[in-house]
Image (cartoon, rainbow, N blue to C red):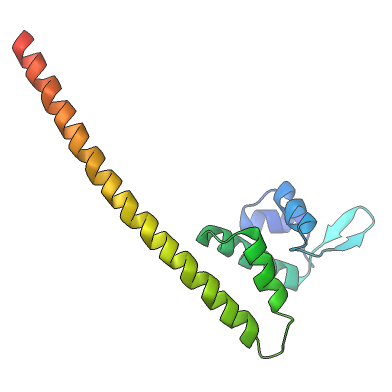
Length: 126
């Protein structure tokens, strides 16, 4: 069993984040009075939640994928859906990367142009 403090330290999250994931139904800690105790399953789910967030999956997608774990013993349904979501997200990320590359190139050109203009003006006044 893990305490809130232990999971927060291990994963670099806040107690508020754990409460949020619990409220969204992504984590299911046991209650010991006012204390929450997380088991190994919750710890693994938290790792998957954070990985999914890092990849840009929505919480709804993450929740769906976590819930599919129990859908069948072979995990074929979960793995198939995970692959679909991951491929779609990967394509989105590649498009964003390409668009960012274009924007960076344009900005570099503008910085160079403005820098040259400023250099010429400074040269004319010196």
